Length: 69
Image (tube, rainbow, N blue to C red; front, top):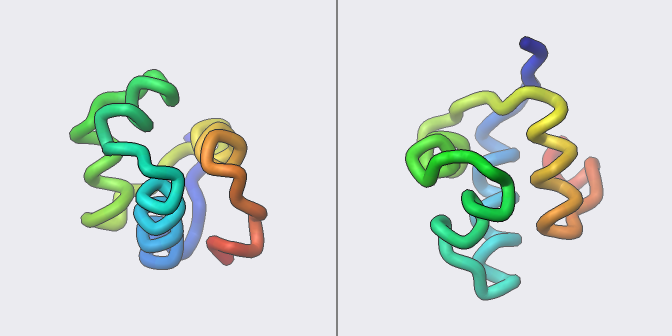
C-alpha cells in the first residue's frame, strides 16, 4: 500500500477543509467509505492514507494537491 509523505500537513488540511464545508467526521467518513476512527487518525494522529484514499479525500473536500504538500 502506498502512502503520502507529510501527514501533519495532510491532517491539518483535511480537518480545516472538512470544517469549512460544515461536515462532521462522521459525514466525511461515510462519504469516503472509511471508519470515523480511521479519519480521526488521519486528522489527528498522522495516520497515512493510501494514494487512492488521498485522491478521494482531495476530491470530496475540493482540495488541490498543493494544499497538503
